[in-house]
Image (cartoon, rainbow, N blue to C red):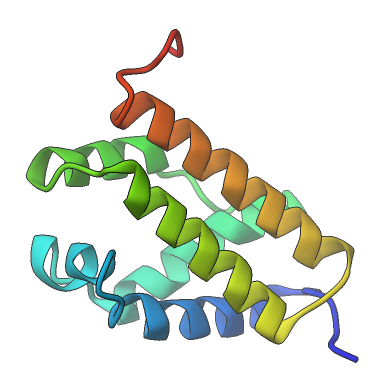
Length: 129
């Protein structure tokens, strides 16, 4: 039986596993390797702060996730397939490593966030402002 996501260490493992797959993915990998040359050394602590804030309400993340992705979208427009692939890979990575209430919570939050981004960027907002 796998354990649940309990702390920052677990989130770091999740992010390491996810990005090791995402960077090589044929659908979304180019965003990390070509559109921006993502430094995992810098990105992993920031994205872990984000998820730690989302999952455990730590208040560590102060960035603007939507703005970061809007900037990426301007450089290389997202399509729904990019968000769908990201969601699939994120859920798969969670399921490969964890199970429990927090594992389910992070997957649901990831789906919600990616869905809102998809609606705003790909579908022109559809009434969201």
